[in-house]
Image (tube, rainbow, N blue to C red; front, side, top):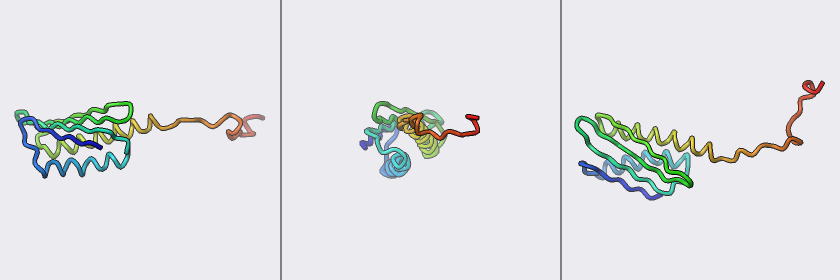
Length: 111
């Protein structure tokens, strides 16, 4: 997975970079087909904004959050992206059904 972290009006310190990397391990544990990830951190008056765009096979997933604390914004952002990635994984899994011949038939229904 390629990870790109940028800051707008904010210097991305090694501590922030490491914090984001450890939080993103949870997402990659659920879904390992992540191709590219871009994280954008910015500071607005009285708010810290965090945005993420994750490129997975066949789709780009985007989330954003804004909080008074940068670490809180990152935590909420990772929670959101984790839910969306799990949702995407559930949609892309094979939903093949068992053939009608192989399905269990309840005899009480037939009588």
